[in-house]
Image 1: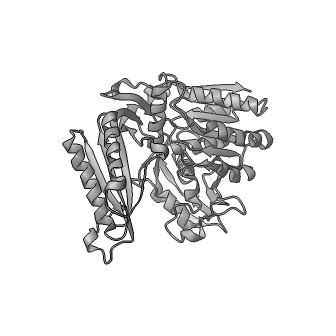
Image 2 (image 1 turned 90 degrees about the vertical axis):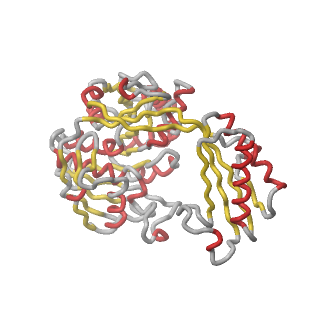
Image 3 (image 1 turned 120 degrees about the vertical axis):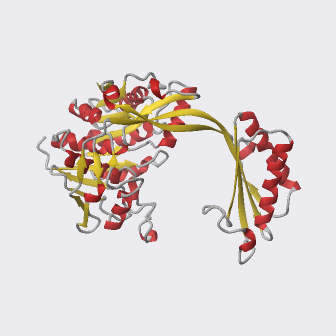
Length: 445
């Protein structure tokens, strides 16, 4: 393409983040804004949505994001890429087309990248099993590159691996060869650093977080990528946060099992070869990343029904706050057994005594009686009705339990907290079986 530097901005690192966070990159007029909506948990939520309503199965905030982004796409030429299509990219594409028409974005081209071997809830036959209602395979960057080649301004995909969303613009802009493993590795590193959005600009930073967190001015990261694979991570001028050697390397190792063999659908990356260096204020250079041939198989997930769960959360005040909570939750467990309510698993924890770190400190070992302790009891059942019946036991504690109850954490107006559980299991599938079915649909508004 003759491009010297391409600027790729992160617009989202997780479903549920405010669309307003996209503005930092859009105002900076990046060449590409990439939104990563998916994680295994959110894919499970969307799978349940589609099982119950075949028109669902994609990120419900897609329309809100497009409403904000499309004026920038039309005015500045920023291209927008997202995996918000999840299990239903065709329906997500229809939503995007409607949003573009509503915004008056005439002439924009919107693409969907999808696997036409799956009819909604999916089907890799060898991955089916008891209770499985959906399957999903992680695709690479090729479908997005094809959509960009066809002139797409907006690309909506199904489950594409996080890093591939960011690699695709690099391959398209620089014409990288699909077997130039080192350059592909450099692009995958861009994706890995940017995929969790503000985690590369000081969010969740384990150092002096008080100097990096500014929720009113959050700046999401931008990668300035050169054709030779050199990358500089930065952020919009004047935005909050920090880009430093430490913030970038912390994200570089996030969710990595083996740094010498970080597996993506497009390339296996050796992160140990990457060299990071400060390149000025809020600028970190990454170069030297090496890659190896892509894996022969793609990773997939199965989603299976796995029962129901709910919880009771009770906060007791001093004195004996921890003992009060344990007494009440122990009573719930005993009552459930006496009433024949079949529970597959119980879980108890006490925040203020033994919550986040597990049972590392018994209440009697505390140097002082804590001023307040929140006790949480969760349960898993096979039947929804059983989970609801146990919830009803919680009401026994309101006026009949120990003194000092400050609140019972339940939904307003007595609503149930029962939620369906999904068992997620990985599998491998031959990549040619899946990639031969990938299709790209591009329509002009």
